Image (tube, rainbow, N blue to C red; front, top):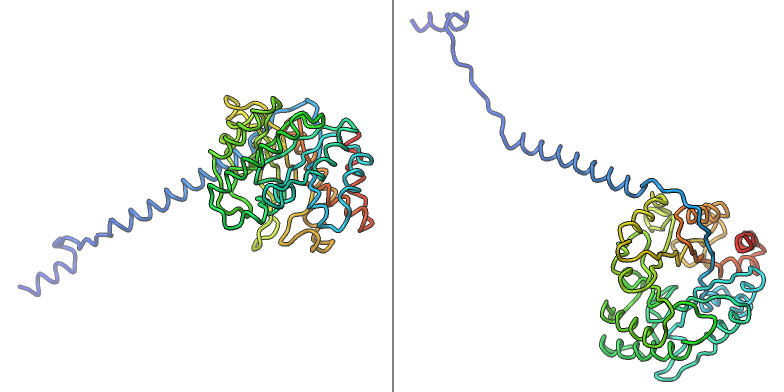
Length: 358
Protein backbone atom coordinates (compact mmCIF):
# COMPACT_ATOMS: atom_id res chain seq x y z
CA UNK A 1 0.00 0.00 0.00
CA UNK A 2 2.75 2.41 0.94
CA UNK A 3 4.55 1.66 -2.30
CA UNK A 4 1.34 2.39 -4.25
CA UNK A 5 0.87 5.79 -2.52
CA UNK A 6 4.41 6.79 -3.22
CA UNK A 7 3.96 5.84 -6.87
CA UNK A 8 0.74 7.93 -7.09
CA UNK A 9 2.45 10.96 -5.55
CA UNK A 10 5.35 10.64 -7.94
CA UNK A 11 2.92 10.53 -10.88
CA UNK A 12 1.06 13.60 -9.39
CA UNK A 13 -2.16 11.65 -9.15
CA UNK A 14 -2.52 12.51 -5.45
CA UNK A 15 -2.00 16.15 -4.48
CA UNK A 16 0.38 16.96 -1.67
CA UNK A 17 0.49 20.46 -0.27
CA UNK A 18 3.79 22.06 -1.28
CA UNK A 19 6.14 23.09 1.45
CA UNK A 20 5.94 26.84 1.85
CA UNK A 21 9.21 28.62 2.58
CA UNK A 22 8.46 32.02 4.03
CA UNK A 23 10.90 34.79 3.32
CA UNK A 24 11.70 36.84 6.35
CA UNK A 25 9.41 39.86 6.43
CA UNK A 26 12.21 41.83 7.98
CA UNK A 27 14.39 41.43 4.87
CA UNK A 28 11.65 42.95 2.71
CA UNK A 29 11.10 45.81 5.17
CA UNK A 30 14.79 46.69 5.32
CA UNK A 31 15.03 46.80 1.52
CA UNK A 32 11.96 49.01 1.35
CA UNK A 33 13.41 51.40 3.94
CA UNK A 34 16.71 51.56 2.04
CA UNK A 35 14.89 52.32 -1.22
CA UNK A 36 12.84 55.10 0.41
CA UNK A 37 15.95 56.55 2.02
CA UNK A 38 17.66 56.68 -1.36
CA UNK A 39 14.61 58.34 -2.89
CA UNK A 40 14.45 60.84 -0.04
CA UNK A 41 18.14 61.67 -0.26
CA UNK A 42 17.82 62.15 -4.00
CA UNK A 43 14.83 64.42 -3.45
CA UNK A 44 16.63 66.48 -0.82
CA UNK A 45 19.72 66.68 -3.01
CA UNK A 46 17.64 67.83 -5.97
CA UNK A 47 15.88 70.44 -3.81
CA UNK A 48 19.19 71.74 -2.46
CA UNK A 49 20.66 71.90 -5.97
CA UNK A 50 17.64 73.79 -7.25
CA UNK A 51 17.84 76.24 -4.34
CA UNK A 52 21.57 76.79 -4.84
CA UNK A 53 20.92 77.43 -8.52
CA UNK A 54 17.64 79.28 -8.17
CA UNK A 55 17.01 81.26 -11.38
CA UNK A 56 18.37 84.77 -11.03
CA UNK A 57 16.20 87.72 -11.90
CA UNK A 58 17.81 90.32 -14.14
CA UNK A 59 19.26 93.39 -12.46
CA UNK A 60 20.12 96.72 -14.03
CA UNK A 61 21.07 98.95 -11.12
CA UNK A 62 24.57 100.42 -10.73
CA UNK A 63 27.15 98.65 -8.55
CA UNK A 64 29.71 100.62 -6.53
CA UNK A 65 33.04 98.88 -5.94
CA UNK A 66 35.47 99.37 -3.09
CA UNK A 67 38.15 97.38 -1.26
CA UNK A 68 38.85 95.98 2.18
CA UNK A 69 42.33 97.07 3.26
CA UNK A 70 44.41 95.86 6.21
CA UNK A 71 47.76 97.59 6.85
CA UNK A 72 49.06 94.71 8.94
CA UNK A 73 48.14 92.13 6.31
CA UNK A 74 49.91 94.32 3.74
CA UNK A 75 53.03 94.28 5.93
CA UNK A 76 53.14 90.48 5.72
CA UNK A 77 54.10 90.89 2.06
CA UNK A 78 57.17 92.88 3.06
CA UNK A 79 56.10 96.23 1.62
CA UNK A 80 55.35 99.59 3.21
CA UNK A 81 51.63 99.67 3.93
CA UNK A 82 51.39 103.47 3.81
CA UNK A 83 52.84 103.54 0.31
CA UNK A 84 50.46 100.77 -0.69
CA UNK A 85 47.45 102.58 0.76
CA UNK A 86 48.21 105.90 -0.91
CA UNK A 87 48.82 104.06 -4.19
CA UNK A 88 45.40 102.43 -3.88
CA UNK A 89 43.94 105.90 -3.39
CA UNK A 90 45.90 107.71 -6.09
CA UNK A 91 46.66 105.10 -8.72
CA UNK A 92 43.74 102.67 -8.46
CA UNK A 93 41.44 105.61 -7.63
CA UNK A 94 39.51 103.64 -5.02
CA UNK A 95 36.98 105.81 -3.24
CA UNK A 96 35.22 103.29 -1.01
CA UNK A 97 37.11 101.47 1.74
CA UNK A 98 36.37 99.00 4.48
CA UNK A 99 38.98 99.63 7.19
CA UNK A 100 39.39 98.20 10.69
CA UNK A 101 40.34 99.50 14.12
CA UNK A 102 42.42 96.50 15.18
CA UNK A 103 42.37 96.18 18.96
CA UNK A 104 45.81 94.53 19.30
CA UNK A 105 47.52 97.37 17.41
CA UNK A 106 45.53 100.29 18.78
CA UNK A 107 45.68 99.26 22.46
CA UNK A 108 48.77 97.07 22.66
CA UNK A 109 49.00 97.80 26.41
CA UNK A 110 46.08 98.15 28.79
CA UNK A 111 44.65 101.69 28.57
CA UNK A 112 47.54 102.83 26.34
CA UNK A 113 46.22 103.86 22.93
CA UNK A 114 47.98 104.55 19.64
CA UNK A 115 45.63 105.82 16.96
CA UNK A 116 48.32 106.94 14.52
CA UNK A 117 47.67 104.21 11.94
CA UNK A 118 43.90 104.70 11.89
CA UNK A 119 44.37 108.48 11.83
CA UNK A 120 46.58 108.15 8.77
CA UNK A 121 44.10 105.94 6.92
CA UNK A 122 41.09 108.12 7.68
CA UNK A 123 42.80 111.45 7.07
CA UNK A 124 44.25 110.35 3.73
CA UNK A 125 40.82 109.10 2.70
CA UNK A 126 39.20 112.39 3.73
CA UNK A 127 41.75 114.40 1.72
CA UNK A 128 40.51 112.61 -1.42
CA UNK A 129 36.81 112.59 -0.52
CA UNK A 130 36.89 108.81 -0.11
CA UNK A 131 34.28 107.04 2.00
CA UNK A 132 35.14 104.63 4.82
CA UNK A 133 33.19 101.84 6.45
CA UNK A 134 35.10 101.49 9.73
CA UNK A 135 34.93 98.12 11.50
CA UNK A 136 35.20 98.09 15.29
CA UNK A 137 35.18 95.27 17.79
CA UNK A 138 37.18 92.19 18.61
CA UNK A 139 36.62 89.95 15.57
CA UNK A 140 37.64 91.92 12.48
CA UNK A 141 38.72 91.14 8.90
CA UNK A 142 41.86 89.03 8.33
CA UNK A 143 43.33 86.12 10.20
CA UNK A 144 43.26 85.25 13.08
CA UNK A 145 39.87 87.03 13.06
CA UNK A 146 39.95 87.82 16.81
CA UNK A 147 42.70 90.42 17.11
CA UNK A 148 43.15 90.32 20.86
CA UNK A 149 45.94 92.31 22.51
CA UNK A 150 48.40 90.11 24.39
CA UNK A 151 47.52 91.65 27.74
CA UNK A 152 44.13 89.92 27.57
CA UNK A 153 45.76 86.49 28.03
CA UNK A 154 44.41 84.75 31.08
CA UNK A 155 41.41 87.02 31.50
CA UNK A 156 37.93 85.58 31.87
CA UNK A 157 35.16 85.98 29.35
CA UNK A 158 33.48 88.65 31.48
CA UNK A 159 36.74 90.57 31.80
CA UNK A 160 37.31 90.41 28.05
CA UNK A 161 33.82 91.74 27.39
CA UNK A 162 34.32 94.60 29.85
CA UNK A 163 37.61 95.63 28.25
CA UNK A 164 36.16 95.27 24.74
CA UNK A 165 33.25 97.60 25.46
CA UNK A 166 35.63 100.21 26.85
CA UNK A 167 37.73 99.90 23.69
CA UNK A 168 34.76 100.24 21.34
CA UNK A 169 33.51 103.23 23.32
CA UNK A 170 36.93 104.90 23.04
CA UNK A 171 37.23 104.34 19.29
CA UNK A 172 33.72 105.50 18.43
CA UNK A 173 34.00 108.60 20.59
CA UNK A 174 37.23 109.55 18.85
CA UNK A 175 35.98 109.10 15.29
CA UNK A 176 32.24 109.75 15.54
CA UNK A 177 32.51 113.02 13.61
CA UNK A 178 35.30 112.11 11.20
CA UNK A 179 34.27 113.21 7.70
CA UNK A 180 35.61 110.08 5.97
CA UNK A 181 33.47 107.66 7.96
CA UNK A 182 30.07 107.11 6.41
CA UNK A 183 29.15 103.86 8.20
CA UNK A 184 30.27 101.60 11.02
CA UNK A 185 30.73 97.86 11.04
CA UNK A 186 30.40 96.10 14.41
CA UNK A 187 32.43 92.86 14.59
CA UNK A 188 33.08 90.75 11.50
CA UNK A 189 30.80 87.77 10.83
CA UNK A 190 30.02 87.42 14.56
CA UNK A 191 27.68 84.47 14.03
CA UNK A 192 30.03 82.50 11.75
CA UNK A 193 32.37 80.13 13.68
CA UNK A 194 35.60 80.89 11.85
CA UNK A 195 38.93 82.01 13.27
CA UNK A 196 40.98 81.71 16.43
CA UNK A 197 38.93 83.20 19.25
CA UNK A 198 39.33 82.29 22.92
CA UNK A 199 36.40 82.87 25.27
CA UNK A 200 34.02 83.66 22.44
CA UNK A 201 31.53 86.41 23.06
CA UNK A 202 27.93 86.09 21.96
CA UNK A 203 24.83 87.97 20.92
CA UNK A 204 24.49 89.92 24.17
CA UNK A 205 27.97 91.40 23.71
CA UNK A 206 27.24 92.31 20.10
CA UNK A 207 24.08 94.14 21.17
CA UNK A 208 26.04 96.11 23.75
CA UNK A 209 28.61 97.11 21.11
CA UNK A 210 25.86 98.21 18.71
CA UNK A 211 24.27 100.25 21.50
CA UNK A 212 27.58 102.03 22.13
CA UNK A 213 27.91 103.00 18.48
CA UNK A 214 24.32 104.28 18.39
CA UNK A 215 24.94 106.33 21.54
CA UNK A 216 27.55 108.45 19.75
CA UNK A 217 26.65 108.26 16.07
CA UNK A 218 23.60 108.23 13.83
CA UNK A 219 25.54 106.75 10.91
CA UNK A 220 24.30 103.35 9.67
CA UNK A 221 25.65 100.17 11.25
CA UNK A 222 26.67 97.16 9.16
CA UNK A 223 26.66 93.65 10.64
CA UNK A 224 28.20 90.93 8.47
CA UNK A 225 27.74 87.22 7.87
CA UNK A 226 28.98 84.40 5.65
CA UNK A 227 27.26 84.60 2.29
CA UNK A 228 27.36 80.86 1.67
CA UNK A 229 27.25 79.12 5.06
CA UNK A 230 24.98 81.27 7.23
CA UNK A 231 21.26 81.97 7.36
CA UNK A 232 21.80 85.79 7.45
CA UNK A 233 18.80 86.50 9.67
CA UNK A 234 20.59 86.77 13.06
CA UNK A 235 23.06 89.29 11.62
CA UNK A 236 20.38 91.08 9.61
CA UNK A 237 18.36 91.81 12.74
CA UNK A 238 21.22 93.55 14.56
CA UNK A 239 22.19 96.35 12.19
CA UNK A 240 20.89 98.77 9.59
CA UNK A 241 22.67 97.01 6.73
CA UNK A 242 23.65 93.37 6.22
CA UNK A 243 27.08 92.74 4.73
CA UNK A 244 27.90 89.30 3.30
CA UNK A 245 30.98 87.53 1.98
CA UNK A 246 30.92 86.02 -1.51
CA UNK A 247 33.28 83.18 -2.40
CA UNK A 248 33.17 81.18 -5.62
CA UNK A 249 35.45 78.42 -4.34
CA UNK A 250 36.97 77.24 -1.07
CA UNK A 251 39.96 75.15 -0.05
CA UNK A 252 40.07 71.74 1.62
CA UNK A 253 43.33 70.05 2.62
CA UNK A 254 42.06 66.71 1.25
CA UNK A 255 40.01 67.73 -1.78
CA UNK A 256 41.92 70.88 -2.77
CA UNK A 257 40.03 73.69 -4.51
CA UNK A 258 36.27 73.17 -4.31
CA UNK A 259 34.02 75.35 -6.49
CA UNK A 260 30.74 76.32 -4.88
CA UNK A 261 27.80 75.02 -6.99
CA UNK A 262 25.94 78.27 -6.42
CA UNK A 263 24.34 80.68 -8.84
CA UNK A 264 23.47 84.38 -8.43
CA UNK A 265 19.85 83.46 -7.74
CA UNK A 266 20.90 81.75 -4.49
CA UNK A 267 21.89 85.09 -2.97
CA UNK A 268 18.84 86.82 -4.38
CA UNK A 269 16.53 84.17 -2.90
CA UNK A 270 18.17 84.43 0.52
CA UNK A 271 17.73 88.20 0.39
CA UNK A 272 14.04 87.68 -0.44
CA UNK A 273 13.61 85.35 2.54
CA UNK A 274 15.00 87.89 5.02
CA UNK A 275 13.46 90.94 3.36
CA UNK A 276 10.79 91.37 6.07
CA UNK A 277 13.66 92.01 8.49
CA UNK A 278 16.38 93.56 6.32
CA UNK A 279 16.27 94.98 2.80
CA UNK A 280 19.67 96.66 2.61
CA UNK A 281 22.40 94.15 1.71
CA UNK A 282 25.93 94.76 0.44
CA UNK A 283 28.87 92.48 -0.36
CA UNK A 284 31.63 93.29 2.12
CA UNK A 285 34.02 90.57 0.95
CA UNK A 286 34.26 89.42 -2.68
CA UNK A 287 36.99 86.85 -3.29
CA UNK A 288 39.75 88.31 -5.51
CA UNK A 289 42.87 86.66 -4.04
CA UNK A 290 44.14 83.05 -3.81
CA UNK A 291 43.01 80.63 -1.13
CA UNK A 292 45.09 77.55 -0.41
CA UNK A 293 46.74 75.34 2.17
CA UNK A 294 49.21 78.00 3.29
CA UNK A 295 49.59 81.78 3.39
CA UNK A 296 49.75 83.46 -0.01
CA UNK A 297 53.30 84.68 0.55
CA UNK A 298 54.40 81.02 0.84
CA UNK A 299 52.60 79.83 -2.30
CA UNK A 300 54.27 79.24 -5.64
CA UNK A 301 53.11 81.38 -8.53
CA UNK A 302 51.42 78.32 -10.03
CA UNK A 303 49.46 77.73 -6.82
CA UNK A 304 48.33 81.35 -6.88
CA UNK A 305 47.32 81.06 -10.51
CA UNK A 306 45.37 77.86 -9.87
CA UNK A 307 43.34 79.57 -7.17
CA UNK A 308 42.94 83.09 -8.57
CA UNK A 309 43.61 84.04 -12.17
CA UNK A 310 42.59 87.12 -14.12
CA UNK A 311 39.82 85.04 -15.70
CA UNK A 312 38.50 84.07 -12.25
CA UNK A 313 38.76 87.67 -11.07
CA UNK A 314 36.66 88.87 -13.99
CA UNK A 315 34.18 86.00 -13.54
CA UNK A 316 33.73 86.88 -9.86
CA UNK A 317 33.09 90.53 -10.66
CA UNK A 318 30.54 89.63 -13.34
CA UNK A 319 28.91 87.17 -10.92
CA UNK A 320 28.62 89.84 -8.21
CA UNK A 321 27.03 92.25 -10.70
CA UNK A 322 24.44 89.58 -11.61
CA UNK A 323 23.50 89.19 -7.95
CA UNK A 324 22.61 92.88 -7.98
CA UNK A 325 23.53 94.11 -4.52
CA UNK A 326 24.46 97.78 -4.86
CA UNK A 327 27.89 97.79 -3.19
CA UNK A 328 30.85 95.38 -3.38
CA UNK A 329 34.14 95.44 -1.46
CA UNK A 330 36.93 93.40 -3.04
CA UNK A 331 39.11 91.13 -0.90
CA UNK A 332 42.77 90.96 -1.93
CA UNK A 333 44.03 94.38 -3.02
CA UNK A 334 47.08 93.95 -0.74
CA UNK A 335 48.10 90.94 -2.87
CA UNK A 336 47.60 92.90 -6.08
CA UNK A 337 49.97 95.59 -4.85
CA UNK A 338 52.62 93.04 -3.86
CA UNK A 339 52.40 91.36 -7.27
CA UNK A 340 52.98 94.71 -8.95
CA UNK A 341 55.78 95.91 -6.70
CA UNK A 342 57.66 92.71 -5.94
CA UNK A 343 56.72 90.17 -8.62
CA UNK A 344 56.70 92.35 -11.75
CA UNK A 345 53.08 91.39 -12.40
CA UNK A 346 50.66 94.29 -12.71
CA UNK A 347 47.85 92.32 -14.34
CA UNK A 348 45.54 92.39 -11.31
CA UNK A 349 46.40 96.00 -10.54
CA UNK A 350 45.64 97.01 -14.13
CA UNK A 351 42.35 95.09 -14.03
CA UNK A 352 41.51 97.02 -10.87
CA UNK A 353 42.24 100.32 -12.61
CA UNK A 354 39.73 99.47 -15.30
CA UNK A 355 37.11 98.48 -12.76
CA UNK A 356 37.42 101.57 -10.57
CA UNK A 357 37.31 103.90 -13.55
CA UNK A 358 34.08 102.50 -14.95
